Image (tube, rainbow, N blue to C red; front, side):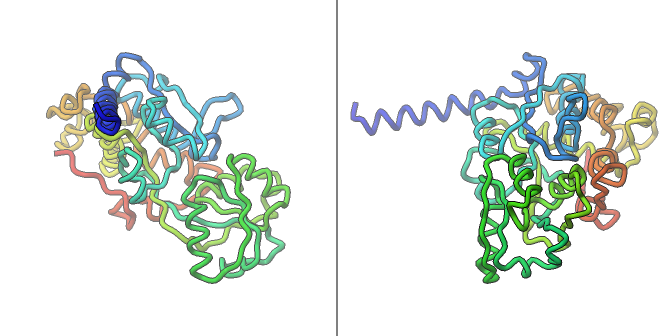
Length: 338
C-alpha cells in the first residue's frame, strides 16, 4: 500500500476512534463516578482555591452542578487547573470531560480545534487595569505603554489588532501563566495589564494595594465565555448545554436552592417539567428526571451563582448588566422546557 494511502487510512481510523471515544463521555463519567472538570489556575470569582484549598467560583459551581445532575453528588468533581495553552489539549486528549475555564467562544475555536462550544454563561469584554498614578482614563491614552498579557489567549490577538487599528503604539510583555503576569504587574513591570474585565476585577479584589490601581471603563472586545466539550459527543454536549438552560430557567421561575424541593410540587407546568415532577425530560438526556432539581439544589439558580461568586455578594461587586435575565434587559434567555 502506498505511503500516502496508508497515512490517509490511519488518519480516518484515528478520527473514527476519537469520535467513538467522545460519544462515550456520559457513560464514562457515570462509570468512573467522578467528573473531571477543567478550570483556571486561579481567577477570583470564577475558579480559585480558598483558604482551605477548596475551589470556589462561577465556573466551579457549574462543575458541581453538572456532577450533581449526572452523578447525584456535587462533591464528585475532580478539578483540574489548566493554563491557557494547555486547556484545549486537555479536553481533546480526554484528560478532562468538560472545560469551564474563562474561555472565549470564537469562530476559529468552533471550527478548527475539534471542540464544541456550549451556551454562553458569562458575557464579558477585554479591559485594562492601570496604575492610578498614570492618570489614564481611556485606552487611547495607553500610547507607548508596556502592557502585560497572557500568552495563548484571545486577549493577545485582540490587543494587537485593536491597537494597530487605532494607531496606538505599545510594548507587549507576554506571560505563559496568569499568576506570574499578576506578580509582574504588581511589581511595576508593566504600565497596564489586559484581560477579561471580570478577571481584572477578581485580580484587583485580591491585590494587596488595590487603591493604587484602577480598571478602565472602556472595553475593546466581545468575550462570550462558556463551556467546551468534544465534537462528536452530542449526548454529553446536550447535557452541558441544558444544565445552563436549567439554571437560567430556574431564575426566571423563581426556583432557588432553598425552595427547589417545594417548587417541584407546585402547580406551574413549566416548573414541573424543569424539576422532573412531570414529563420525561431527563431520560431524553440519558439521566433521570430529577437531574435539574439536584443541580439547582446544589448551587442555586443562575442569579444565585452569579451574585455569590462575582456579583454584589462577592468581593468583585460586578453588576449583572448583559448577564441579567432577558426580562431585565440582559442576554440570559433559556430555551423553553417544553
